[in-house]
Amino acid sequence: MKRTILILVVLFIVQVGFAIGINFYQPQADTNEGNGKLVATSTDGVDHMTIEDSDGSKVVLAKNGKDWQLPDLGNFPADGNKVDGLIRKLADLKEGLPIATSSGSVKRFKLAKDDFERRITLQKGKDVVATLYLGTSQGTHQIHARRDDQNEVYAVTMGSYDAPAKADDWIDATVLQISADDISKMDVNGLSLDATTAPAAKTGDTKADDKTASSENADKADADKAKTVVTWALANPADDQKLQPAAAATLAAMVAKIRISSVLGTDAKPAYGMDHPVLKMSLWLKGKDQPVDYVIGKSDGKDGDYTLKLSSRPEYFRIAGYTGKQLVEHADAKALLAAKPADAKPADAPSAADKVDKATH
Picture (tube, rainbow, N blue to C red):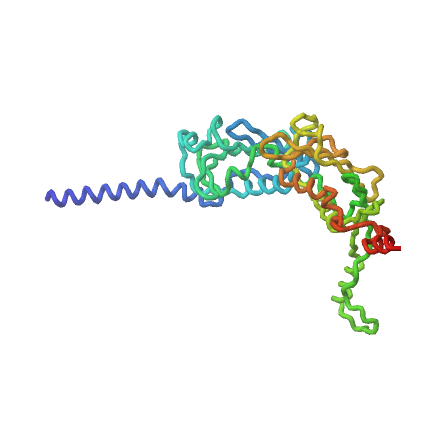
């Protein structure tokens, strides 16, 4: 009898536990099937984004027309693709099933209002669309997150590195870039270099009697006609100077594709090394009457970075150490000019045989 009662009690406990489990789990399964968005409101039209981190760093990004800017850097251009990419990533984040729902878990996962890895605020004008908190890492490419209006903690696919809180990580690093083909003249280290443009040699079918050329060959011939070759030459070479055109072309390409590392502001500082620049050069662009002066100084920092100033912009820029070093080396006259033969002598200098012949007569 006692054995029967004990079995019935155990079965009753199992049934109660199973019922509780079903009741606890089922409502969440009904409401969180992995399709809910962490950002509940549409992000279309978002024109302001603020990102903060736990160290007190903060970056504000604002949209002006189609372009993103950094208001705290004097509306310096931001990397629009990167900004739009982050907004799309945030808009696509799925809630799934919450891994925690208590107010205590908010602090444990570093998602509190006064303790977080990232706080991201999206706005349309002055209206806040969403405020998201990113906290501790869940694993590879996953992080804990929550909305400002809830305690539910979710694991989402992204990382805090996707939302840096420093302006330098959002600047348009290509803002100084130009087309090398637009450079018509360079003055560097006492040398004046001119670019001449000529049509490239045709590579298509040149047989005059081939009247059945395919449309593919015709298109290729048209493309060849549009191509040009840029050749560099010294404007006023000395008798012993010979330019290496390829070296000049390399320098032009390097200057045209400069990437900046950070914006240093508009005030010159002694640490920039601009009082004793390591490189000064001027570029003339096609269709422009005035040159753009480039001045590069060597920074005092241990990282060996360089400071760049253009006459066409008010800011000072930091460029990577290897970039500055390569520019200085390729702009050196020794790199641009062909080396003089070690045994070179004036054409009218008498040879040793001539001297002997004169001496015997």
